[in-house]
Amino acid sequence: MEEQNLEEWFAAQQEGCWDLAEPKTGHKERFSAKLGQKTEEKKTINLEFWWKPLAVAASVLFIVLLSLSQKTGTNGKELATVSPQMEETQDFFSAAIANELFEIKERRTPANKKLIDDALHQLSILETDYTKLKKDLTKSGEDKRVIYAMITNFQNRIDLL
Image (tube, rainbow, N blue to C red; front, top):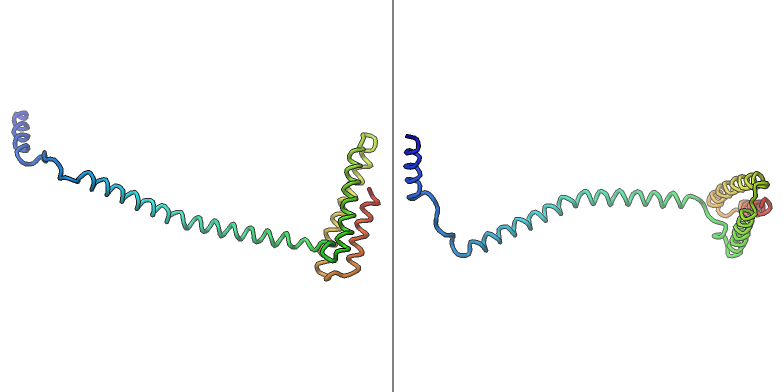
């Protein structure tokens, strides 16, 4: 009984309910155009979505770089910024210290290792003092006593090596 009812129902449906006609001309082009519009809208939405996080990230990066540049600027003035003669002096002492360090490291043996390590430790203390003197030079406005102390520090480092 059910099979007969289903067959009658399908027969009734085929007479006018099923859309068996071909689509109108240009249907495929209109459909493709609608698909193209949808993907373009998604792209703009996607760009709008990423715009704000990228702007925040760029702002944070800018602030970090700005703070780092200010921190590096607080190390103080170099002796070379005082005058051309002081620049020559600093270059001379820096080259002499670098040369002496190279020679000491080349001549290191197990017998003199402790002596060299102690000298390098003392050298690092003098370099820390020099960093403080650079800050003092910035604060003092190129005070002659600070400049003299910086030159003396260079001489002490060379004497140590």
